[in-house]
Image (cartoon, rainbow, N blue to C red; front, side):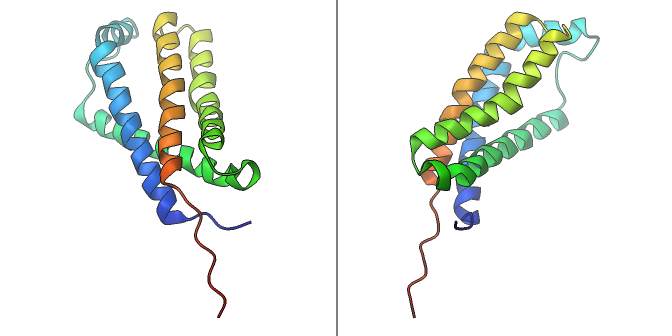
Amino acid sequence: MGKINVGRWVLGGIVAGILINVSETLLNVVFLKGQWESAMKALGKPAAESSGAMVVWMIYGLAFGLAAVWVYAAIRPRFGPGAGTAARAGLAVWFLACLLPNVALGNMQLLPGNLLLISTIWSLVETVVATVLGAWLYSEQAAAAPA
């Protein structure tokens, strides 16, 4: 098995992370802003996030994209290159990073169920699409020519 092409992984991961950041901004700042403000108020937390918190979320989105494309690169030798393998990688990352934490939050009744449901479904589509896009930019290093 070959090594992960770090340059292409970083490129694909950053592109996937940018897509995730744009998508999450649309979801949480545009579509669900009022619901998030109500949920945070019910928890006794500030309704609006600071600019520092937004920077953390942007870094989180980039790290998420990098992780998703890394999983694709890691499973690619077993499942082969392509969108199907990328979708599998995206599903695995979504399951571990989105579905399971949201089930836990729902079980603790910390956030409204509809907010968690919408976020979980949105993140499923977002994660798979971002992983497929990032994987499209990923390629293994070409084998060195014999001397």
